[in-house]
Amino acid sequence: MKRIAVYPGSFDPPTMGHVDIIERGAALFDELIVAVAVNSQKQPFFTTEERVEILKECCADYPNARVDSFQGLLVDYAQSQGASAIVRGLRALSDFEYEFQMASINRKLNEQIDTVCLLTRWEHAYLSSSIVKELFINGGDATGLAPEATLKKLAKRRAAG
Ligand code: ADP
Image 1 (cartoon, rainbow, N blue to C red):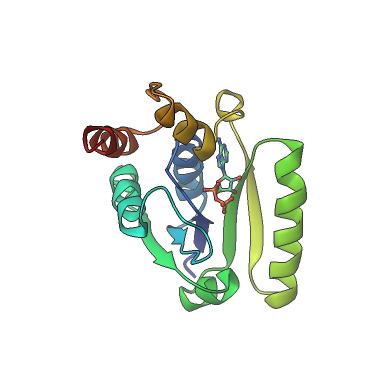
Image 2: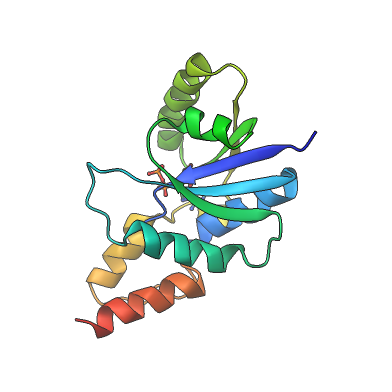
């Protein structure tokens, strides 16, 4: 049986930390679905389409990774895709509390889908989408922190003023 996992997130925008989890998740599962969570309550920095486009470029090197977006309950989406696992990344202790809560709720909702947390590489431990956005807003350079596809979209945003 094919082992399918969903890696969900806001990815607003994708960072090198996300790319690292994609690479490692794709190595662990037969298929990895990188899924942009559409949250109508939040005003995103990049549109869902832009984030999907960036992630598609990031996944180009991993033939068993594909990109999608979803709305509603994650476990329902995961089940609709035939996934048996949810992949998440852990940076600091503060991530753990949130991830533990989400994993517990998701297990309660669907016992068949387990959550697998991958520990960040130490060089990405401080890295978040918020840091990349903050840098951009203040005129900084996010080279090395975000993948080329994100940097290109940020440059486009800057050029547009
Ligand atoms: P969400 O809003 O769902 O937390 P994010 O896009 O912020 O979405 O993150 C998606 C997932 O990627 C989360 O599990 C988060 O912990 C993980 N992640 C984010 N940044 C890093 C990083 N630098 N290293 C490892 N995992 C990360």
